[in-house]
Amino acid sequence: MTSISKAMSIADNLTQIYEQIEKTARDSDRDADTVHLVAVSKKQPTERMQAALDAGHRCFGENRVQEAQEHWSDLKSAYPDLKLHLIGPLQTNKAKEAVALFDVIETLDREKLARALAKEMQNQGKTLPCFVQVNTGEEPQKAGIIPADLPDFLTFCRDECELDIAGLMCIPPIDEPPALHFAFLAKLRQENNVVDLSMGMSSDFEKAIPLGATYIRVGTGIFGERASHI
Image (cartoon, rainbow, N blue to C red; front, side, top):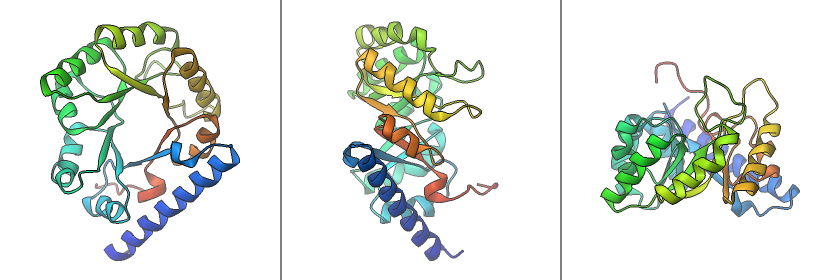
């Protein structure tokens, strides 16, 4: 596929995703404007991200700080309305770089990281919205706060660290129905007085929207499969 046809494909994919969001929201008696699309650009070549930018999209998600710096350091100055979400695990020693580059942190999952982010935001004079990642399946290999620990962790983040906790985020277990975990995260939101929910990806965002997702994270559905050498 030529670069021109690939760019057209990405623009078409974005249009299709927007239309799916609109239809699913309408069918769920929701306003589609309350559902925000995070285009997951991890491991994508720059020309694909540029194609999405050319199509008018401005909200992107990255998994790693270093890769995001390579992708976006120059583009951020060219697109002042660009919003970058960190959607992958964050090491505390990368907090300084993350606060400098990203606009939203979606993977707050431990007290040490909360302290590091709070310190860096104070040092840099910034306030970034944060999502607490919840391990809804309580999977030992996966990051995230265990649901039973969520109330105390939120209190710590809000009161001791003075972080702006905008919402909750989850990645359901791959072998369980995602809607069960989306509904559970929505219940936790209601119980803990947070506003946003980041849940749903390319294969299941149409299940997440009726259950209250305000941010969906879509990569393959926009950019196609990632090449193995990227």
